[in-house]
Image (cartoon, one colour):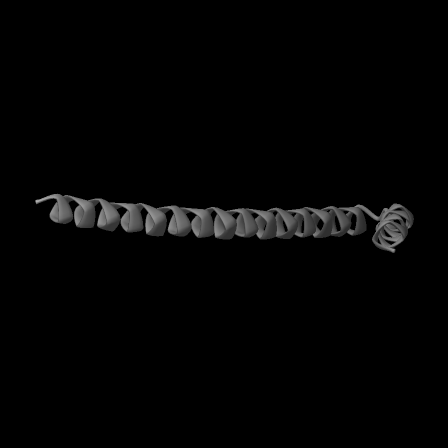
Length: 74
């Protein structure tokens, strides 16, 4: 009876270990996905701003912003 109980406890511990590992990996993947979406959204917004500036004939302001972004990237 005691051996059976010990065996059951070991199985439960192993299941909890697997659940914890899976949850940790899922958290990591979710964080990476959210970061990628955030970066993509920032790029889309930046492109939209540049398109709007070009549409309104503000080419000099568009070039200034592009120069600023290039400076930040380096």
